[in-house]
Image (cartoon, rainbow, N blue to C red; front, top):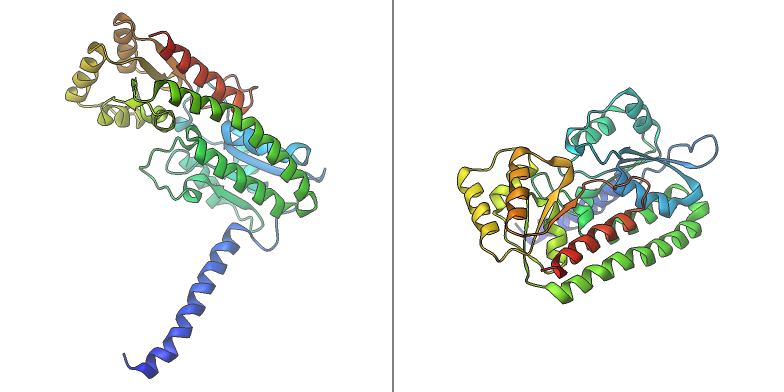
Amino acid sequence: MTKDLFKVLYPLVGVVIIATIAYVLAMRHPTSPAPTASNGVLRIVAAENFWGSLVSQIGGSQVDVLSIVSDPNADPHEYESNASTARAVATANYVIENGAGYDSWMGKLVGAGSNPGRVVLDVARFLGKKSGDNPHFWYNPEYVNRVAKQMEADLAYLDPAHASYYTANYARLMSSLAVYQSNIADMKAKFAGAEVAATEDIFSYLAQASGLDLVSPPEFIQAVAEGNSPSPAAVVEFENQLKSGTVKVLVYNKQTVTPLTDNMKKLAASEGIPVVAITETIEPPTLSFEDWMNGEITSIENALQSQ
């Protein structure tokens, strides 16, 4: 390339980059937000109640939040949308989906409607994750904090008149989240390196944050999380780990119990290993996100202390 040609093209490259950034920002924050509900509050639809709880606490009285998946006895992976859900998503000011293939039904609902003023927070995309990555982002305290901050920014964009209100609520939420996150740090200080097992990858982020050594065969926990059968070799490896005498706790997903995971629970119990249940959605649904999470962390820490 000659110097003269370089001088011509170089400024154009900068223009293209700037235009691309502007386009991406426009897609996240449209220039004309959708009209609010008749009572003036923002209409928000969250695919799952753990994200719904967070945005509801930030939005307070200025939002009306519908959390679609909130039944602790249901498997969120198997949810099937209906006409009522589709209408809610189509008319929402703000939609929050987990992404990474966890709630693909929500992505379809967002894509089916035409609402140019709607803001959509795809948590996986926001975190730089993709389909195939562990989608249980709400079990990672760092991710929770980042998502909550983005929620505050999105609400302030949609409703700038109440930006200071959202900021104050966000500050209160962060203080509340700090309690359960402090308990994670406390568990790490006491039990870092302790061997634990889990029937699927829902516990992976929390185990890492707590400094626990999750020894379960990756093939086993990945297969169960995806609704598949792990190989016989992975099953035998997991059974041998539970019989080894080094595993301190077995954590299982209460919402995706199968004959195989039930057998692992029974084996752990027979070996004197405490078995702790956690859930994918808030249980009971009336709890706040942080109270739910803190209850699960307390149960795990109590189980570790019993060994």
